[in-house]
Length: 530
Image 1 (spheres, helix red, strand yellow):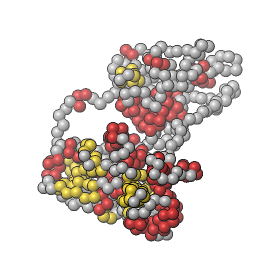
Image 2 (cartoon, rainbow, N blue to C red):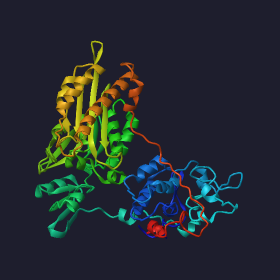
Image 3 (tube, rainbow, N blue to C red):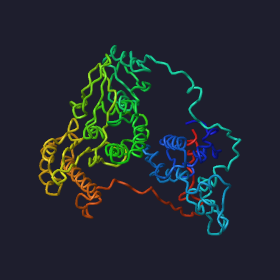
Image 4 (cartoon, rainbow, N blue to C red):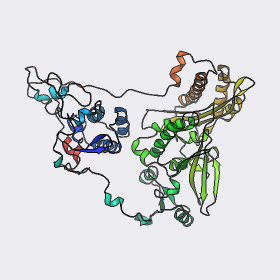
């Protein structure tokens, strides 16, 4: 955290961001709304919110604010005051933030967040006087982002230093403790040359996995190669047969790319894209998705990877290049060989992923169950795909793929169940036999790693049942199958929850004690400003 004389001041001026003003005021909000207690988590919350405002071309919604704060954990406040503090930026009326402070007909200030009379500014005590008990909190909702003389700050908002952006990027070679070598190539041929010299070198991008291994698992890597600046690994292209996704593409970049593709191409060809996008929403938090890469997640080969079952079920292929520039292609289903073992030789690098377009009447669905919805690893996850075609007046399964994660050392394909379903008409009569085959395909021993065997076994059946209902519903929307029972409709709906809301009342205590009074934590202002 940097000094409060910059953008962490008590108030602020504005910077133009498209058709709205980017406020540089906000750090004291968590303090005055009682969102900063011990202060340990505060810098992360403040910087996450600042990053959202800096990157937004229009005022963020409350949903976007909560998404941007995901991944920051707090043990003190219960999150309500933190979300309340930053909720001021979810504007309901843009004019309230660019015009002078407005008042209602009875002379009370208007809250720019709700568009209603601002209670925290107008609170009075029983005698009709402004309550001194609320004086410490009444200022955290500003009437206007222009309520301070901008000359005090005069374009001192913290951004990435332009002089560093202008510097010419150079290949790097660094030496660390214990003989560790660290390289940063700028071209694919440089990377392949390094890989030929150091076959055992560890490739890193966001360091979200290797950093944990070296710090907490005593892993030793003598040579590390950062591929963050190799343009050939950052490809994001729309091609005739599908999407080409470079192995170094960050997951956050993939999210944005998929949203754009879905909007442009519609739902007919993008069922796989939609499933991956929905799964990414529950993949770690924003900070991790900003640095973690597609290839890193694939090659780590975690048995509980949220994406690998989807790559396998969608029929994705991986392009691999060796140090002699020879490129080979392998299907995702054949890539995972064992626990954290993949079909990648020491002289090879994962180049890109090819995600094929889906065909008419082809449906892809993602599943994940964890202890909690956000920021948690899966107990069981899955990717499922089915292609329905017409034959002799009936709509039957021509191709199906069912892949589970979290049930074995590698993502597991339900081969017997797939073979049984091909050529069949999807109806409720298939379910009993399909369930019995799934139990054979996805066995879980009583002492299986991870425990909770009975619950995890039931999840494998539950996911398939939900997939069956999802496909049935999709076919029904086209008039090709019977509709679902009302009781089953909830099974096909994606998880959603309303925006967090809450209130806190303060008792008016007159005995001279601080107990029950909304007083700002003494250290909070220092915590939020650095």
